[in-house]
Amino acid sequence: MGDHARVLFELRDVGLDRAGRAVLDGLDVRIPEGATAIVGPSGAGKSTLLRLLNRLADPDRGEISYRGRPIAAYEPLALRREVALVPQLPALLEGTVESNLRYAADLAGEELDLDETLRRAGLDPSFATRDVARLSVGEQQRAMLARALAQRPAVLLLDEPTSALDHATRDAVEATLAKLRSESNLSLVLVSHDPEQARRLGDEVLEMPA
Amino acid sequence: MSTSIHVELWQVAASLVLVALAAAISHWQRADLERDILVATGRSIVQLTLVGYAIKLIFDVDSIWLVILLLAAMVLFGAITARHRADRVPGSFGPLLIALALAGAGTLGLVVALGIFDPTPRYLVPVGGMVIGNAMTASAVALNRLGDEMADARARIEATLALGATAREAAAPTVRRSLRSGMIALVDSTKTTGLIFFPGTMVGMLLAGASPTDAVRLQLILLYTLLGSVSISALVATLLAYRNFFTPAAQLRDL
Image (tube, rainbow over all chains, first blue to last red):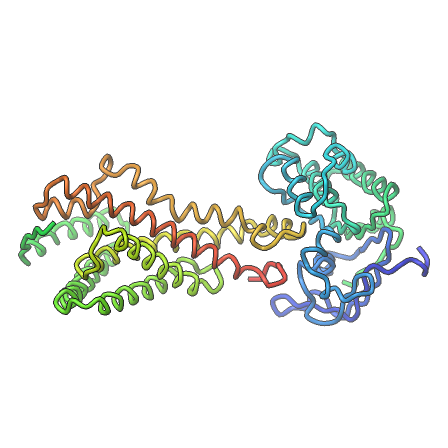
C-alpha cells in the first residue's frame, strides 16, 4: 500500500488510562484501507486500540477519526455494524450458529445468505444447526467471524484471531482471512503478538511500543 | 375476620427455651452462630415491640397519612437494606427505592381498588409490610444476580455490543435471568404452599381462632398480592439498574 491508499483511521496523540495506569499514551497511528496488522508485546494496549476503533471505549486524550470524520460524530451502534470487532475470546449467544448469525444480520438490517456466510468464514453449511456450546474453540472463533460477516461490515477488526488455536487450525483461519481479503474489498485490522503472522496477513504492519 | 386472642408475656418468655436450644446446637456443633442467635433474638424483641407500639398508635389515630408515612419509611429502609445485597450493581439505591415504592403503591392500590381490602390502617399496615418486605427480598435477589451475571457475562455482552446491539439488547439475557431469580422463590413457595409448609398468615389466623375457610381465603389473597408485588419490584429494579452498567454511547463501564 502506498501513500495513495485511503486512510481509514487516524489517531492523534491518543491516550487512555485504566485504574490510574496509562494503557495507551501519545499514540499516533494511521491505518489505511486494506489489511493492516498491529503487532506488539502483551500489555501494549493492542486490544484496547481495537476497542477504540468501534467505540466500545473512548479515549481519555487525543482524537480519533474514521474516514476523515471524528469517530465520536458517528452514531456508535451504526459505526459498530460498519466496523465489526471480533474479540479475542469467542463469546457467542446461547443457541445455534444460525441463530447467532441471524441475530447479527437482523441488527444490521441485512439479508442473511447463511451458507455463503458460513463458507466465507471457513465453516461447512452443516454448522448452521450446531449448538454453539458444543463447538470447539476454533469452531467458535470461526462462528464469531461468520457472525461479524453476516452484518456485511466494511472493516473487520480482529483481536488475536488465532491465539487460542493449535497450529493446524491457525493455518486454516489464516487461509480463510487471506481468502476473505482477496475476494472482497473488506478492510482488515488485526492485532497479533506474532510478528510472523502480522507479515503473513498484513499489507501494512504497525508496531505498538511496549 | 375479627378474631383475637390474648398472649401473656410468660408465654413469650417460655418460647425462648427454643432459642436456647438453637444456641446449644450451634455451640455443640461449633457452627459459631451463638452470637448471631443472641443478636437476632434481641433485635426481634426490640424491633417487633417497637413496631407493635407504632401499629397500635397508627390504629388508634386511624389516619391514612400516618399509614402512608409508615409505608414510605418501610420502602426507604427496604431499599437501604437491599442495596447491601446488590453491592456489585453501581447506583443500585435509586432503582431499588423506585422498585419498592411502585411495588407497594401498585399492589396496595390494586387490592383497595378491587375492593379486596378496605383502605384502613388495619389492612394496609400489615399487608403493606408483607408486600414491601417481599418486594425487598425479590429485588435484592434480582440485583444480586444482575451484578454477578454482568461480571460473568462481560465478554459476551461486549461482543454483542460490538455487533451494534443496544445496551438493552446486549443485557437482555442477563436481565431475564435476574428477573427470574428474583421471582422464582415466591413462585416455588406458592406452588408448594399447604403441602410442604403452612404460610404464616394462615397459621396466625388459625391460632387466633378464625375458621379454616377464612384463613385459607385470606392466605390466597395475600399470596397472589405478593406475587404481584414481587414481580413488579424485580422487574422495575432490574430494568432500571442494568442501565448503570453502560455509558450513553452503549459502552460497558469499567467497574
